[in-house]
Image 1 (cartoon, chains in turn cyan, orange):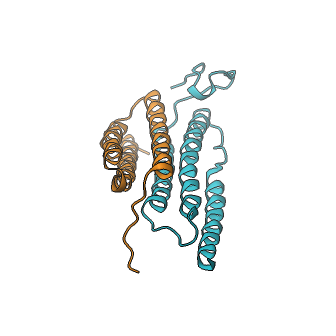
Image 2: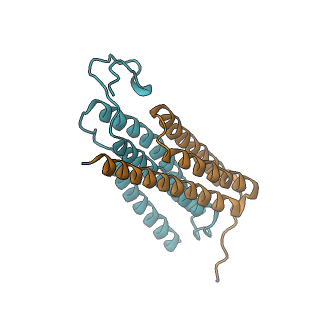
Image 3: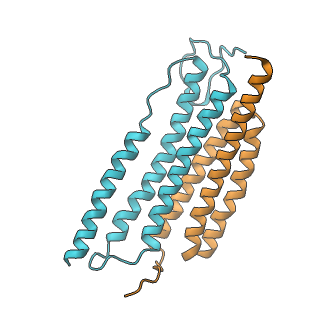
Length: 131
Length: 103
């Protein structure tokens, strides 16, 4: 099934020169599952951030410690949810055109921020131990 | 590949996708559960999102047209953003009730 002139939601402003076709449903489903997996990652980060701020006992001597660790986790969750949606759209678009899939920025983002969070947590713990 | 085999495989893909939606729904429940520990009403509202997401997943198994899939993914993203905002408000202004620790 060819849909040569059908603009999609995320590129309605662009010129449609290449022909687009409905991709194999299995690819569409796989793309959707990838999006859902990132969504769960985002929710897990939010729940982790909430847990640190709301359920942990305060770090002795570092009253802002829980917020420094928890709030960035919640923000990262929101960012990952939005980026995952954008990548889902880009992948779907590439599948329609038969283009190679674009590179995902999510693994790098997640790895870098988790590494930063680990250092931050270590700093808070050390400060708490010193005071 | 025979027609039957192709159908069977896309059927399993649909099932895997529906299960992925179920897991996502459960994740919303988990977030609601943590919020409910300190803020019962907000937590119960967030837990209430879970069955809605689960229902969306059941629709996903029935080969929805692409436009509907777009709407669903956008709905999920918007909902997560909303939950993140709620979480930030609860984390910033809510009173914390730490788990009991032995001295």
